[in-house]
Structure formats: structure tokens, C-alpha cells
Length: 162
Image 1: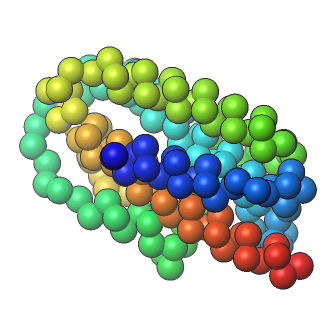
Image 2: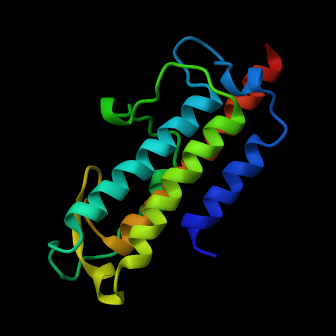
């Protein structure tokens, strides 16, 4: 199973058993709740969907070196999400958020499924790695989600202590 799909399955396993209160609870005013993490992941999927829908077919076909995509999982290197990827400041139930995230992933998966094999070697800009092939972009999304799975684990430990 690809890291793209594996990470999503792990995300659902991490939120299983949380109450809606725990799901929306922030460990501190500066930290995200589990719901906010999932909202951020939804926005990543929506942004990737837009990028692939609008720019994949005109992106150049070229070779690019392998990038250390696993570094996206490293939570010691803190990053601030750009405003368009920052989570909304509202409350939702796990069921509502899961539905929104599932819809975003279905849209992204549909665009990916529409690509021809050669399209996966097309190169698009990336804010951290400068440029990635579409194949690398898809893998990056999985590694990025794994970063946030670790964050969800941290949040759950912190809210248990409250």
C-alpha cells in the first residue's frame, strides 16, 4: 500500500475512540486540536486537487532527483502553516470532519486516477522541495500526513493529562 493511502488509514486509527470533546480539545491556546489537524489535512488534499487539476497537464515532463520526502515527518523541524492551509477555528464532530476529509480525498484520488502513467513524471513547484514530480507530490502528501499523525499522538497524550 502506498504511503498516501497508508497514512490516511493510520489517521483514522488514531482518532478512533475519541469523543467529540476530546477531538475539539486543544492542549493549549497555541496548539492545534485533533480536529484542527484534520482540517489542515483536508486543506492539503484540496490544494493538491486544485494544483493537479489546473496545472498537471501543462507541467513539464522532466527528470528530477529523488528528494528526502521522509523529512516531512520530522516534528523537530517546526513549521507554521501558511494562512490558506491553517485550520478553521470552529468545532465539528468527528463524523462531520471525517466526511469532509473523505470528500476531499475522493476528489484528489479521482484526479490522480485520471492521470496517465507518464503524467506522474511531470514536475510541479513545491514550497519546501522547490519542485517535485507528481509521483513525489503524492508521496509527500503521505509523509506530511504521517507528520501530523505524530502530532495527533502528542495531542492525545497532552489532553489525557489535563
